[in-house]
Length: 184
Image (cartoon, rainbow, N blue to C red):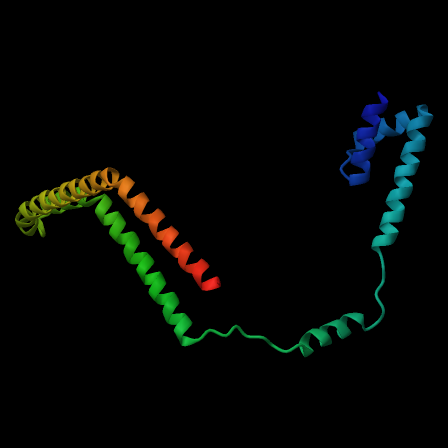
């Protein structure tokens, strides 16, 4: 056995994970190798020291004294006002409704068509489908109008950017003059 293998087996011994076959191999190597035997004795000495350090006895009554101190501490309760509770309920309800709305909007076509096939809601949904189509058309019109308005505002601003910058500069100069006059 190589010394590196013996070192690994020593670590397994220290961790308490060594098998009886591995222990036998390690023991045979330690009998033959003086260097590994010295290392093993050092490891075993450290292990004994660590075990002694871990077995510290507490003074008598120590646990009872600590528990009495803990029980003597004032009990602190979280203070939630009614207003805070209402805010939390409102926020939670809003989040739930927003989530449900997002899901319904995402799957609205699938929901509408599956309800249209239903025997209970089919008649109502058949009447609702033309309304849905009209609402979608109106939504498209609003979006197109909004985009057109934004485009015109953008064109106006880009065309008059020089005037706007000039106006801002003039306002800054006037304000600077007023501040300097006040400081005199």
